[in-house]
Image (cartoon, rainbow, N blue to C red; front, side):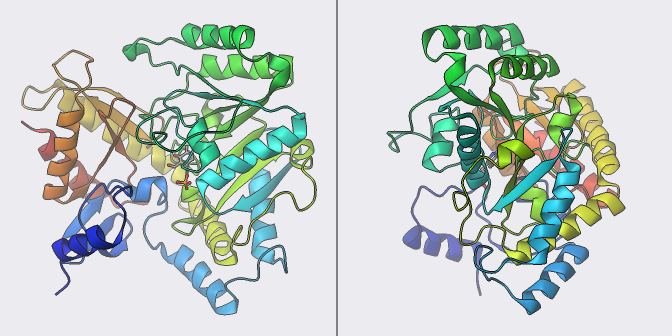
Amino acid sequence: MTTNAGLLARRNAAVPRALGHATNAYAQRALNAEVWDVEGTRYVDFAGGIAVLNTGHCHPRVMEAATEQMHRFTHTCVQVMAYEPYIALAERLNELAPFAGPARTIFFTTGAEAVENSIKIARAATGRSGVIAFAGGFHGRTIMTSALTGKTLPYKRGFGPFPAEIYHLPFPIEHHGTSVADSLKALEFLFRADIEPARVAAIIIEPVQGEGGFYEAPTELLISLRQICDRNGILLIADEVQSGFARTGKMFGIEHSGVEPDLITIAKSLAGGFPLSGVIGREAIMQAAEPGGLGGTYAGNPIACAAALAVLDVIAEERLLERANTIGARIKARVRDLAQRNDTIPIGAVRGPGAMVGFEIFAGRGGTEPDPEATKRVTARALEEGLVLLSCGVFGNVIRILVPLTVEDEVLEEGLHKLERALTI
Ligand SMILES: Cc1ncc(COP(=O)(O)O)c(C=O)c1O
C-alpha cells in the first residue's frame, strides 16, 4: 500500500532538500475545500494550494472547460499558431482591468514570470532601469523576482549576485513599529542617496502582502505612491498574484484603495489550478516592447486559458466577491472570539480584506512579540486535526487562511472548529 511515510522516504532520496513542504501528507484526490491523502485521511483545505483555488478543487465548470479544450488540442505554442481561448481571456481581463482607459493583457505560466515580464514591460516603456520594491514583499523565485523579494532567508542566500538597480523600502506595519510616514521618508532618502526618480522605471507593491504576512498596504501609502509615480514618470505595478480573483472581496486587491495601477501581475487563482499567469496593463505601456520581446513556449497554454474563462464565469455566477466578504467576516469574527479567551494561545492582529484573512501568534497575551515556534506547533496540530493550514510572515508568526471561496458552509464550520482545537492550549 502507498503510504505518506513511504512517499516521504522516496521524496527524500529523489528530490533536493531545497523544496519545502508545509505537510508530509501526499495528496490522492481533492474536491472543493476537501483533500484526501494516499492513506485515505480527509482534510479540510484552508490553504487552497497557496491561493490558487478560490474556485475550489476541481470545480465542475472549470474541469469541463479544461477537458473540452484538452480533447481539441493541448498545445500549439501561441507564437506558432494562436487560439481563441487566449484572445477571449485577454478580452475579458481587459474589461476587468482596475484602471480607466484601454488595457492589454499578455499571458505567461507562473507568477514569477508575470512579475519578471512586468519589469521588462516597465523598462521598455520608460527607458529606465530602477525598480523599487518593499521589504517583506514576495515576488517569486527566479533571479529577478528573488531580487525583488524583500526577504533574504531562505530566498536569497547562496543565489546571488542579483540584478542591479533593485531597491527596497520598509513596508508599513504599525504594530511592528513602521508607519506610512516611515516608508515615505525612506523613499525620499532613496531618491536622494541611491537613485534619482528619473532613473526609476517602476514601484512594485502587493496590495496585500502574501508570503510577507497578510499585511494590507495602507490606502494612504498607495495614494502617495500613485502621486509620486505621476510626478516622476514612474510606473506603479500591483502584484495581484496572491490577492487577485475575488480573494479580497473585490476582483483585485488594489480596488479597495481606489488607486489605479499602471500594470498588474496575475496568476494563482486565475486558472483554478492550471498554470497560467499574466500582465494586464495600460495600452500604451503594454505596446512598448518590441514584437518578439515577450512570450514563452508554454505561455498562455490553451487548457489553462479555457479553465480561466470558466473561473471568471464561476466568480460572476456564484457571486464570489460577495461570498468572500461573507466567509471572511465569519472567519474573522470567530478568530477574534478565540483571541478573547484564556484557553487559547496568545492571538491578535486579526485582519484582512474579504477572505484574505491573517492573524498573529504572539509570545504573550496582549503583547506583539512574534512567536514563530508556537505558530509551527499550530499548523502541525491543525494537520493532526485534519486541517491543512499555512503560516507566513516576515517573523514566521502569521496564520493565513486561503480557504476556497466556494467552500460549503458545513465544511467551513468544520474547518473553523479544527482551527479552534489547534489554537486551544
Ligand atoms: C505576490 C506574489 N507574487 C509572485 C509570486 C510567485 O508566483 P509563482 O510561485 O507562481 O512563481 C507569488 C507566489 O506566492 C506571490 O504570492
